[in-house]
Amino acid sequence: AQSVTQLGSHVSVSEGALVLLRCNYSSSVPPYLFWYVQYPNQGLQLLLKYTSAATLVKGINGFEAEFKKSETSFHLTKPSAHMSDAAEYFCALLSGGSYIPTFGRGTSLIVHP
Amino acid sequence: KAGVTQTPRYLIKTRGQQVTLSCSPISGHRSVSWYQQTPGQGLQFLFEYFSETQRNKGNFPGRFSGRQFSNSRSEMNVSTLELGDSALYLCASSPGTSGIFYEQYFGPGTRLTVT
Image (cartoon, rainbow over the protein chains, first blue to last red):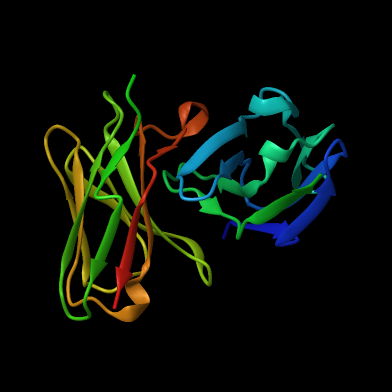
C-alpha cells in the first residue's frame, strides 16, 4: 500500500528565512511525487512534480524539492520565505499505474513579518 | 486555456436534501476526479471518471454518486444530506493517462454547508 506522511501540521517561519516542509512516502514501486499549494478558499495548484528524470526538482515561486530514495523523502524547500507563501501545502504520491494520487494531510505554512 | 471551473462556489442545504455539483474540466482533458476536503479528514478521493465511465471509486457511501458527459463535464450528486457532508468539494481534471505525463489541475471548489 502507498502512503504519504507530512511531518508537522503547522510550520512557522519568519519572512526571509528558509522554508522546509517535510514529506515521507511509502511505495512498493518507483513513485511519482507532487507538491501542491492551496491558498484560502481556492483549489490546489501544482508546485512541482518528480517523475524520475532528476532528483532535484525546481517548481514555481522559487520552490524546489529533492527526491531521496534512501530516505523515502521528498521535502519541499525555499531559500527565503515571503509573506505570500503563507498557505497549505500538500504532498502527493502516484504509483503502480494508478490514476489516483494519495495525498498527505497537509502542512500549513505561517510566515511572520 | 481556461482552467477547471466549478459551480456553484457556495451552497447551503438542509439535512435530508440532495445536491448536485458541476465541474467543467480543462479543454481536452478526459479525466475528472472529485475530492472531499474537511479539516478533520483532509483530502479524500470520491471517484474518477474517464470518457464517461467511472474508473475509480473511493470509500464513500452510495449517497455519493457522479457522472460524466460526452463533453467531459462532470456532476456529482449527494442525496439525503447529512451534517457531516459539509465540506469543500474539489474537482480535478487531467489528460487521463498515468505516468510521467500525469498532472491534476484543480478547480476552486464548491463549499457545501449542511444545516
